[in-house]
Image: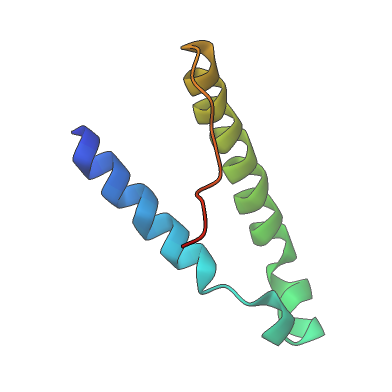
Length: 68
C-alpha cells in the first residue's frame, strides 16, 4: 500500500469514527453491540499504539495540530 493510500485510509477511518455517536444509542442498542464495540475499540487502541510507537522509535514526535 502506498503512503498516500495509507493516509487516505486513515482519514476515512477517522471520518467513520467521527460518525459514531454512542450517546444517541438506546441502552438496549448499546448493550446489544457492547461486545463488538469493545473488540473494535481494543483493536483500535492496540493498532494506534503500535503506529505511534513506530513513529516515536524513529525519533519523531506526534503533535496535535494547531487550531486555525
